Image 1: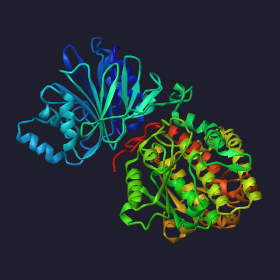
Image 2 (image 1 turned 180 degrees about the vertical axis):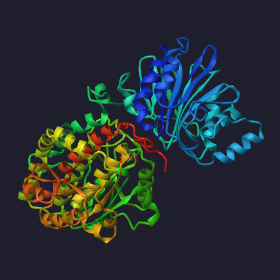
Image 3 (image 1 turned 90 degrees about the horizontal axis):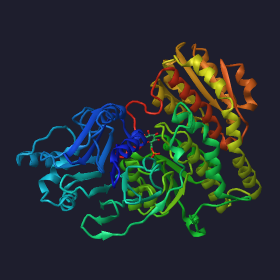
Image 4 (image 1 turned 120 degrees about the horizontal axis):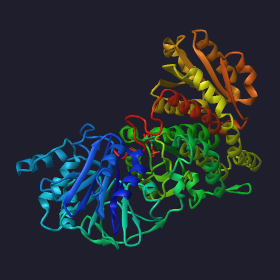
Length: 609
Ligand code: G6P
């Protein structure tokens, strides 16, 4: 969950390294650094704090330039954020510099051996161990030293390496942590993620798992860990350059919230043809569906919350068991799955370590894996039997909004497709729901038009330190995402509670300093929600309700404020109810002076377990 970049070519590497790191800061931002191979040898500038600190130093040193360099933006795992623990790390001999993303599991053992051999360590990181290990194996051929080192290392590692004696070579390594090579003309780039490369090239090659790239200015070669040359596969990225820019918005998060109607159209339209649905290349035979025993959904964070919506949506529709698990918990409950289980992995990045581990576990047990992923060719996408891509474009704000919404859309399409294939929905109901789906982008657009009204409510409530989100059924699943949005960016403590469960203990926390955000879009649960709201109101809590336009009057009578969202089939209501929750969290965080796009302690892509 750190970001790495590298350049080799004819230009000065430094401007690309800095702007590439800026695009990757969402992956980690507690320190950053750059190393170049100049006429003076390996030169490093690295500092604790945001990239701006390093940028200022670099800009004050006009002779800090070279046509070969690597850079890093860090999210600390081993060793606190500090100048010394920042990357790049340099070997004791001063000849080799390295940036690392991932975790080295056997670093203590290796470090002990190296210390016994006289190596001196400056940092507390596992990453420094890698560069010292390579240096211990180095005999004037950096590639050969790296080849030997990767055989000793255990854990996950994406690496960028430069060596003083090899000014024409940049090395990249991937084991369980992504590295993308961007191909230019007489220059090549490496990065952890596509946005860093967009301003330079659209031709990319994802470094396959357990491979080493030997990169020169004019070309590059790939080798597996046994030293055998392997094939390069290129793809062309069609994301716009400005897709990774703010376009006049104060924050990426707001820009991404506002992009949702377009993103949903892009995710929906290739999958709808008249009244029928298409599932890209996924084929479910009659035989397969007949034997399908259950669906298991695994994901982390917001993607898990999409899974919670999916459970309610799919189970009701398909009359099949749908389980949803946090990916980090999945393996440890010895899940009962076999070849007749469909495992759905949901992940924006496609690189989340816990989700990858869950996927591999399910695969070992013979399950069929279908993933819902935003990043083309990512690890989860490439290890799945079927992939349904969300077309959300690059998402930069750490708190997800548009990717969450796009994932919901894919869930609806998949659920309806399976329902049709198993005759659980008739043509009339299907075409009705498909029409409602097609209308969602316009309804979201209308909901977004009330942004300023929602912002006014944020002003009224932003000082509350204790917030409960309550709802039932699908609304409860939306509460989980609403609560996560609020706490991750505004640092307000909030909890999502099933509205009916509150009375079983948690209500003791409710007093006049509590804000209750109630979501009530499910027709058969409106009256129950009204009773739950009355109960907390009687304890002095302030009540903000999000409901469908149909029930405004009912809720006006029991609450302080009501936000209404357009009327939609209850099954699809999550897509609308989440919009005011995203907006209110955004504005509360803004009013509280928080760093919205880069909240403290978080990273967008979590590539460690
Ligand atoms: C991190 C992010 C969350 C995200 C989760 C899963 O924790 O901060 O916003 O939902 O990872 O990420 P994924 O890329 O797998 O959807």
